[in-house]
Structure formats: structure tokens, C-alpha cells
Length: 113
Length: 115
Image (cartoon, rainbow over all chains, first blue to last red):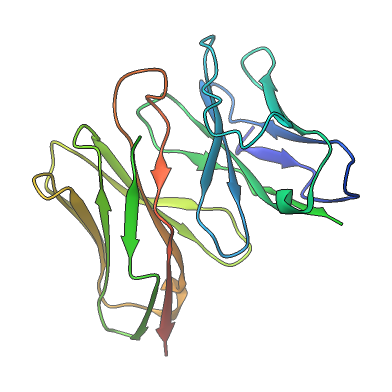
């Protein structure tokens, strides 16, 4: 596609429910990243995929968070048993190669009530 | 791991003035330093970047300088306009290892340009 596409754009969920966030990177981009941005805060790294290499999961805040990337393209970030502190904008980005800048998606605004 | 500090957290200038935002990084091996602009409710967008083999880079009204010895880099915006108002993020990336492509971001600077 022309840009990084994320869905849904907004998600309201009840505490304790599971959610899935989707990212469709730019076609041909080998690297895909997930970041979290809380209100008025910076960009917190979550996880990074590069080609067929094992993902860098070092930023995942707890074992309730997981992500996968199927076929080297679409990625899904799953949050199990959501908590109120999970409320944030979840941003996905992709880059052509590891040493290029990111193109961000518009993000998914997650609200846990 | 890498740590990036960004200052100031807020910056208010009059239209036409210059604005400077500074970042320091901790890992001397870092070699790529991009700057992103995020307008309210929108995605961060890359506005300029610099690699460690270059000391300065310009693109119209924006420029970035890098001091590898001191481990800091700065964004300079000249002749500011109201549409420059946004949150600006710096970032750094260190080479090598499984996290080669991962950027570490500063906390952001809210720039307000008053007409």
C-alpha cells in the first residue's frame, strides 16, 4: 500500500478483555516496529521484526503483550486481560531496511474502561 | 541500552524567530539520528535525519547538527511559522546486534509558534 495502515483507528474495551491491533506495513518494507505513546508522553518501544529473524521483544511491558508477523508482512499486536494502564495510542512503523528512517501508521487509540 | 534526553520539553517562539531543540545520547556507537514532527492527532513524520559521518545537514528552513564527541545533536528551525507548531521528537539508533533498526526516542518538545 501507499502507507502504513493500522486498524482499528479507535478501540474501547472493558478491563480484562483481550484486544488485537493490526498493522499493514508498506509493501516491501522488511522491518516493522510497534511503539506505544501515552497521553503527552514520548514513544515507548515495544517490539521489532526484521525479515525472518527472531523478533526483539525487549520492550514488551508484560507477558500480557505479544505480537506476531505473518508472511513477513502484516503484524498483529495482542494485549490479553487489558488493564487501564494499557490505554494509549499504539503506533506501528515500517522501514525499507534496518538503516532507514521509519514511516509511521496513524495509530490505534486504545481506551480501557 | 541507549538513552536519549531531549530539551526543552516546551518551547514558545514568535513567528519569524529561530527555534533550537537539543538532544543528548548515551551510546557512543549510535550512528543515525532522525527528527520527527508530530502534529496534534496525527502520526509522527520524519523531517530530517543525519548520520554519524556528517556534522551538519540542511533542508530549507531546518537543519540538524551533530557533535559526536559530546554526544549531542540539535534541530534548528529558522524563520518559524505557525504551521511549525507541533511536537518534535529526536531519536538515535546504535548499529549491530539484533536490535540494529530500533530507534530510541527522546521525550519530545512541544513547539508553539505565535503569530
